Length: 287
Image (tube, rainbow, N blue to C red; front, side):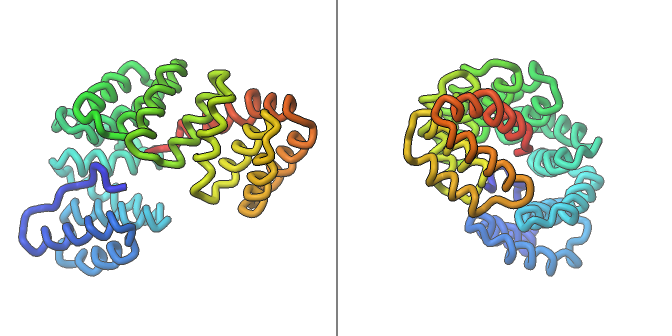
């Protein structure tokens, strides 16, 4: 996702490079993007936009530690680009870096009319336990860009963390309408489970598991199907088994035992154990 990434810096050569990187990011070719940026870094070693883009690319490639240093260096240069600050601040927050809050707050002050800046700050505040302030930012983000799936998703997360399940479900459902994302589908399904709307959750958990290899998503879909004696339960269990590693393998065995005990046991395990636990974990994931 390239929503809300830094704008190209001035200068024809640098602007051309960053525009190329932007296109590569949209195509998902982060390896080429990172290679181009590393090659260009000696020419622009103190440009925070280059560093931030390189951090984005390296994070997408799973190089979290290296990416963190890029973001930290970029913020330390005290840039005045609010989108850059918000992207880097969000990245720092994933490492519990104390500079994250300052970068995100400064970005929101510099660009109160930029939706991506407001939802990033709101997302940070909601996960840090400041729901009232978070919702002020997220309400503004949605108003500024009513077509932003991410803004609706983050407001749904904030409302769920604030104990407002019905409002959270409405926002998550709107996010799915705007961008049919499997992760959001899964979170929406879990929110429905926790709200006692298990029958409605089946479709969302099914779709949340349909496009990926996430073992947990398949286990949730298996339990939801089993709660209504649906044969899809065993198909999802086997898909979970094929991708499970480590402790997830133990969870596969536990879910298999619940499925074997019948619909009532499967539903109880989904509603009272795996559903609420997984929802809490996924709500706390950084954007």
